[in-house]
Structures are given as structure tokens and as C-alpha cells.
Amino acid sequence: MILAALAATLRLYRGGVAETQIPVWRQLATPLANLERRARAIAEATGTRAAECESTVGGGSLPGQTLPSWAVAIDVAAPQRLLTRFRQGTPAVIGRVADDVVLLDLRTVEPEDDARLERAVRIAMEGSNGRRRS
Image 1: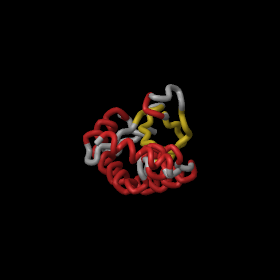
Image 2: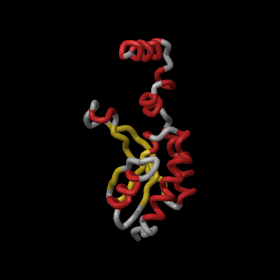
Image 3: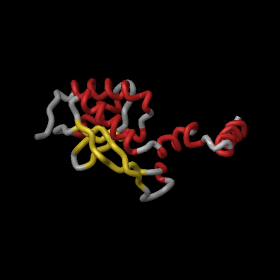
Image 4: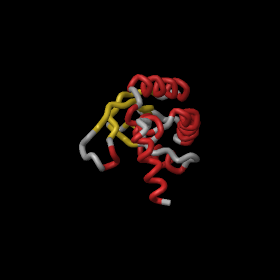
């Protein structure tokens, strides 16, 4: 099973389609303009805002390497509490806090999941009493 999976993956590389067929490469290759457009659309629909950010590359395999990205940015009084609500939701959403703002980096979200993310933001915001920092 492992060898079959490895062989299939290697065929994608050899065929020159790894950037479109392997999710991590597809995410790394996503143009910044696409991420910005998606972040702005979700922000507009949820009453949040879009913000530029940096994505960490490789989940630790490339220490210190980042890539420009765009995120849905949510200003709330208790960002850690909102992150907890996101993690406990269905689907679970993993974000991070930077400068006391919750960031949901769209480089890590497939475009077909944008509507689900939008719903998750609405639900989590309802539970946070909508209190935003001024």
C-alpha cells in the first residue's frame, strides 16, 4: 500500500502535474491575487476584514521559511476564546493569533471549502457575542 502510494505520487511529479494534483504544492503555488480575492469575499460576507499575512512553509520542515498570503482577520476582545470555538466547531477550523487578531490563512484552505469556512466564521462569531475590539 505504501509503495503504491509512493509510486502514484512519483508519477505526478514525473508527469509535471504535482503543483495541481498534490494539495500542499497546489497551496504553495496559489497566486497571491487569488488568496486576496477569496479573503476579501469571505471578509465581506462575514463582517470581518481581509489582511496580508505570512504563511509558514513546510510545517517545520523548512524552518524560518515563509510565503506571503492573505487571511480572514477577526478583531475580538478574547482571541484565544474565539480560536477555541473554531477548533470545537464542525468543521474544526485552525487559526492563529498575531498582534491580538485571529487570522485564518487562506493559503491553507482549499477554494472549495470557502463556503464552509464562511459558515464556520459566522457560527463562531455568534458564540463570541460579536464583541470586537475597538
